[in-house]
Each structure stands twice: as structure tokens, then as C-alpha cells.
Image (tube, rainbow over all chains, first blue to last red; front, side):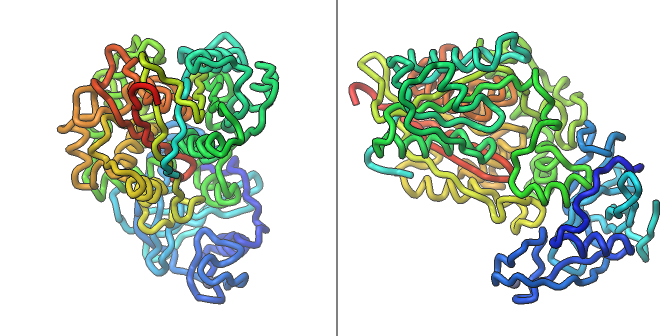
Length: 146
Length: 386
Ligand SMILES: [Zn+2]
């Protein structure tokens, strides 16, 4: 999947900066509230539970299970011209967080609910300036690729 | 909102819904508004409040085109497809509070003639999450987001393609009885439904709403507008509700929780009626599954009985709960749910001819929008002078 036409988000957005810095290094890094230690995802400037404005970036195991998915047959998203492709929601193994990401390396007919998946850190953007997390059949260790 | 004093739907009007209209959106809207005013028995100049929706004809255009002399309020209710029903609550409060006498809800769009949905400006909340989380993952349409809900629901509750098919086929069956419907002359059989191309699986072509050109309008007033010949239609209660959180679907707990659950719980608590008292339901049908999801969230079924309601008890005319007798967004036209209120009003007056639900007295109308906002109203027939 060529992701060069995928528009880059604001990589310096304080709520997401740690996440994107992490994916660039092949790591899955998510915020944890410094006040109540809950994980808020999507990240929020103020914790909805304890109203703390502080959070720490914390590395997580880049593995999970497929919680839901859709096979996209009509291309609509910028940078995603080739169809079909699969968008999934992945429940992480070591955190009460679900991430949205494309599911790769498995044919649509072979996709199954709750299948174990692991992260693929894939370069994207016109100058490959950011790294998205894609999810493929579970491997023993994460793989970086272009 | 529920009170002893209720507001009424005084008049309704619409254009025919078509794939591509030659006339301007202003001309379409004026036709629908004229029809609603005429139906209400008032001159257009007595419209003094306007509630519209993003992307459709705006309030200033309505005021200008109709030369409305004394509009006292204008508003946009912006919770996507939940807006039309939610606006009934706002309009009711305005007219009962004496702010305005005749508040008109308007939808008018050339949806199919303008840019395609995916290219239009998104009005979703928390755009930061859309760009940071969804667009980078190739997800940017309601069909894709809601397909994720649909898939999980099918897995957890045993809903199948047969159920989704019946929702689409029932809508088309009804539209074939509705001369104003975009799909009036187009039948749909199971085989064609099943062969629809994939949009965002489980959603295929015929699971998805139409894009339409047209307009419709609903006038809310403290005056009933009925007479000896025509029953009045009262807005008995209306509620809206928001999912936790309202601006992201991926991390809700439970995942399938939606705002309509809260709205419906408040609604049934506020009235001396229950889901079994409804003679029909107009359910916001942006996609087939959302009908099943909302029927459950609104209390018409449980996850265990929703399949039976759809396939055995029946959601077509003559079934236990006729749903979307106009054809809905799937087969009548996409007026963002305001057309559901128009249909419920006409059903309660007994004006629906071959698609009439015999003796309809109470009809629930739902809205579903953005990422899980919900709304629900109960409209009731008042016979004789109010
Ligand atoms: Zn906190």
C-alpha cells in the first residue's frame, strides 16, 4: 500500500506529538493521565475523569486483537485510492484502548473477529515524513517497512 | 421535553425527490415552504421562525426568497441526522414560550448535483480526531465508521445480511407506493440487493441512503391547524441524547452505546405510552443497520428480539411495526430525516393512500447523527377541534 498521498496530520499537535514521535521510531506510545493514571484515547487536553492537564507518554506493546472492521470498496479517503482495503478497530493487549488502523497482509475473506494482530510501522506522506501504524497477522516482533 | 401544553405540526410540504433537479435549491425550498404554509392554512408571511441544517438552504436565503417580514429567530441544529427531530423540541419551546408563532423547519438541497458526500466539508465534531486518527487510516465517511459498528453488532447479537436486506427491501416496497419518492418506479428484489457493490462492507450499495435533490418543510405552531375534517398532529414529547463520548466511536464502553438510549429512556418515562403503543416508526435510515440499532436503542426490541421483529413480526405495512412507510432515506429521498416527520404527520392524518397505516394514532420518529447523537419524538393524532 503506497501511502505517499495520505495527507499528514499536524505532527506537532501537543495531544498527538508523542504518538507520532513514537511511531517514527517504530514504537507505540500513548498518553496516560498524570492525575488519575487513566488512559484517555482519543487524547484530551484535560482529563475528563480528574481534570488534570498533565499526561505522560508511555510505551505499549504494539499488539492487539481485531475488535471490528470494514472492507472499503469505494475509494473516498485522500491517499487511499486502491480498493479494497480494510479499516479495523484494534483492541490493544496491554491497555484499555482501541486504535483505528488499516489491516494489512490478510485477505478480506480471511479476516476474523478477535484475530490477533501486531503493528506494522509504515512510512506515509509525500516525503514519507510520518509513520502510520498498520495492523497485520500477529508476529513475534514488530516490523518496520516503507 | 414533555408538558401538558403541547405544540403541533401545523403544516408539512415537500417537492418530489429526484436524483438530479434542474431547478435551483432556492426554487425547491420555496415550493416546499409554500406547500407547508398552504397545508397549515397560513400565508407564508406568518412564518416568523426558521430552523435549518448545515449544507442545506440557509435561513437568510429563506428570509430573502420569501420576503419574510418579521422573522424573530433563526437557528441551526447541528447534530447531523438527529437534527430534524431535535429541532422539533426547539421549535416547540419557541412557540409555547411565545417567542414565535410559526416556526418552520426546512431542508433543501441539490445533494446529487453538488459535490459528492466524501468531498463535502465535514461538519463532524472534533475535527482534530478525524484528521489525526481516522483520515490517516483511510476512514472518512459515515458508511465506513458505521460499518464498524454494524460489524460488531452482527457479531455480538447474531444480526445477519438477511436482516439488513429486509430493511432495504421494506423501504423500497414502501417507496414503490409513494409517488414523491425518488425510487417510486424502481423495484428492488433480494437478488439485486445481494449483488450490490461493496461500499464499506458489511454495507453494500443498497444498504446506503440515496443522495437526493429536493426540499421539504414542517411548520410547528401552538395552533393545531386541524379542523373537523382533518385531525391535528401533536408533538407529544421529544428528547435528544448524546453518546459517551459524542465525538469518537472507537473507545465507547460499551462500544455500541448510542445517544438514543438516553433520549428514549427519558421519552418513555415522560409519557403514558410505550413502544407497543406506536402504530408505526419512522427511523433514521442512513444505512440499513442503523434502523436495527435504533429500533433496539429506542426500546422497540432487545438485542435478542431485533432479528425477529425485522424478519418475522414485520416492519412492512401490515407488519407488527411498519417502519419508514415513505421509503426513508434509503428509498424516498435524503432530506436528513425531516421527510420522516412529514410522513409521520401525513400518516396520523390518514392522508397516505395506498401506504396508509390504518387508524394510526401514535408514531415515533427517530434521528441519528454525527457519531451517535440520537433524538426521538412521539407524534399523536388529535381528532376534532383541539
Ligand atoms: Zn485523569
